[in-house]
Length: 117
Length: 155
Image (cartoon, rainbow over all chains, first blue to last red; front, top):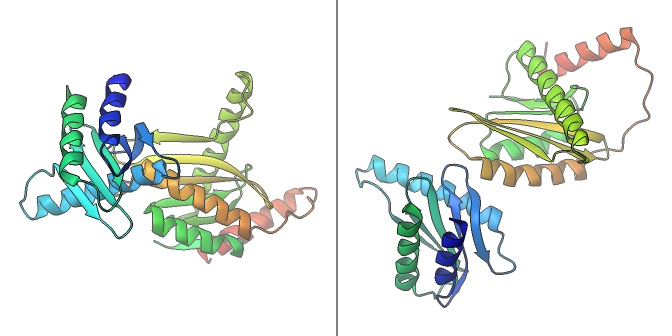
């Protein structure tokens, strides 16, 4: 299982501009498997990404938008991408502002599907 | 929910930790169970039993750690249906302290652990050096306990 998840992260991290990716326990906000560049605070990213996913899911439910599948948060210094990998995981990627989000998203959704199998 | 402290230097770090982590209950105590600061309790009896139990859990897990050749366990986490409990020790200039954190579904163990580390750093920076220990007398113990309860619950 861990090998399979690691291989998925490896594919995400090959997308140009991705600084790191990880599987996070959605409820706990703790890293399960990670592949991060030096300088990326994995614990903080995992905790905040899980918190963000929970809040966005709450907002989506309140507005009747249904289940959230993908979150993109673009900031001045970087981009945070979060994909739901039901039932318990999140796929999280930290990337440069100019990352090809479409490609990263594709790999993240593949990783999410792979984790669910 | 109010935050009350026996030792003033604990207040700012505690208030910040509670705000950041969204914890429902936080108790800062000595390994003997003496409470230095708390957030979330309204009744003295609840606080005293929680601190005694927290200190006892740390003592027994420490003894268990020694039996398996460890110097000690870093932190304990219990996941419940509605609440999680995080219990961890830290060394400060004031001596060893134990932090008991109870949190609900509005936060996560990841966030609590993350901000707990910052809380410990802030406690270390704010803590005064430990005073020389005096012999504990029964009479002093009772008056100290009453003083602590008065500070915590403004009785």
